[in-house]
Length: 177
Image 1 (spheres, helix red, strand yellow):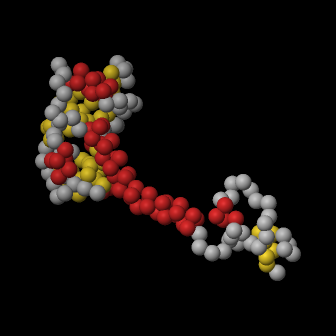
Image 2 (cartoon, helix red, strand yellow):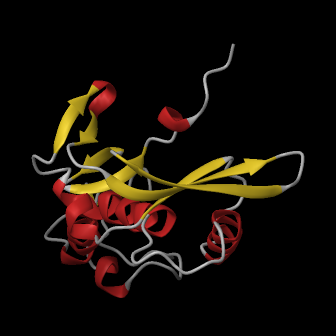
Image 3 (cartoon, rainbow, N blue to C red):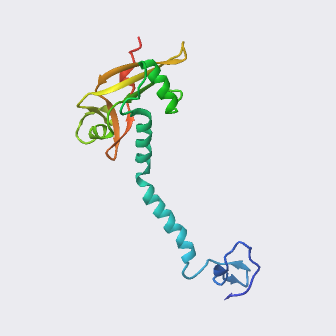
């Protein structure tokens, strides 16, 4: 036989839920809550809303990181490519990268590579159809400093939701024998 009765309850149980708690008088065990539970539905609704809003977030975050690591337009003045690389790697707080490339173009032409301005390449990458002015910074382990080279080259990137998120540096590394 089921009866509603007052039982000692934990202090963390919300008062609105106390009235819904049913106890079996024979076994003295609590049964499943019955009735509508707007308080229990709210966290679920909030979780679903947060997941929906965060759906595109990884692409936005990756694009911001791409811009911070690879876009410098116009090129920051420096006396030479070596000084440029040392200064930019320090300013952008890019540590531990053996090679990093800065693209000296507005973001729109770089974005255009993701929208038909690029030729498909294996692994989902896109080769730009046009060349960009770039600076390649390579860390020299023997001198513990960066060397830099100014170039004009096509770029190889990966896109997410129409925005660049990854720059392929390996195409610039010398072949190892």
